[in-house]
Image (cartoon, rainbow, N blue to C red; front, side, top):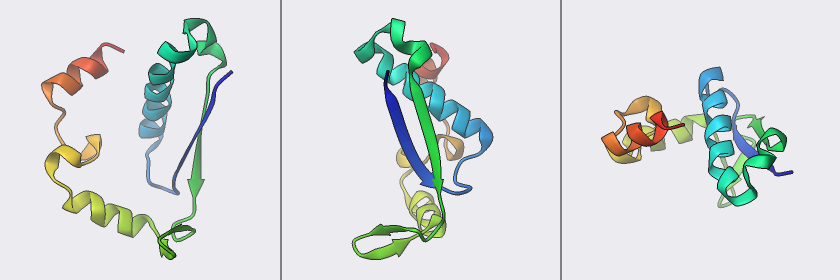
Length: 95
């Protein structure tokens, strides 16, 4: 039974985004473990307090993440902040 853990900053994802990432990760792993394992595939989304995450010896928080996201090129921004391309739309609609 696969158990996949995703750590995000507290408040980073909405309830809808959390549900979507759980569904998307489950879909991504099924080809590797088999459809029979779907009902026993766990995806845990754990929230970490902003500032309780360190990168390169420095505390990192949600504000820093948001700044990175906002300055990213449009094709590298989160789905909630950009229009999906036709290929991405097709892929998501097939699920």
